[in-house]
Length: 254
Image 1 (cartoon, rainbow, N blue to C red):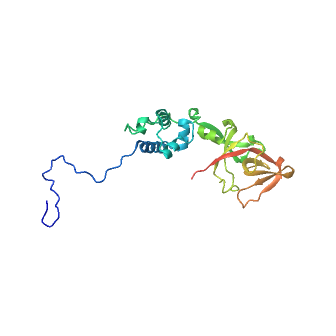
Image 2: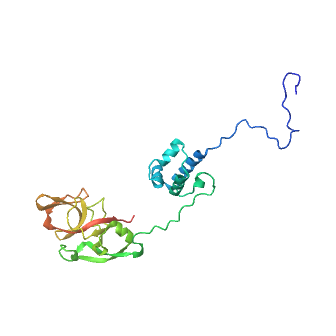
Image 3: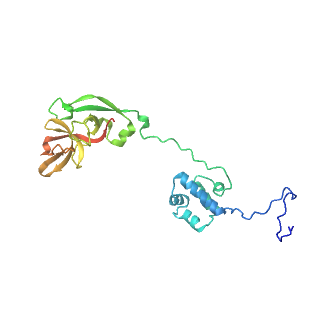
């Protein structure tokens, strides 16, 4: 319809049928099946914490199977898609968006420690600072009771049998800041040979209990080292050092 000025007015839609829909100028682009597949593979990799390479090896035995699909936009065969779905713990239908049901994670048994059924393990506690004899033997040190340890923690600390492990407390300030006077120590009495340098050992030195670093020296001598720089190191004869055991763990209350 012309308005007399040479401009045509748009026809009113008031008299058009109610089910009339004018054509859209822009249509939404639909994702292709391969784009959907790649997107859902990425979702599963993220959910499972897997790498593309690991999932490829698990599915096909080849490290580049998923990368090939992603970079070449190559739709896998039905058999290979089944293998990929199994590796990603889902179904082919979900990967291709034929199903909206999210994949089910497998029912995993609760994680148990290797010694969860053992119950607490009791270790003997000694006082390294007080020797009933000359301090040259373990039996010289007075027992102060027992300490219970979680068996899983104890197995992580040492593979030695529990009856060969002792609990003691730090002696003095000579090992600060590594060890404090009140720190709890676990001593492995199976380790009595000085075959590792710069480890911390519980020792009897000239009849007194001590916790020191030891280092073999020439001529059958041993360096007795304190971590506290205020204490000078000593070089003594190996015969004067009685190794009670190696300190394999320490803990402190904050």
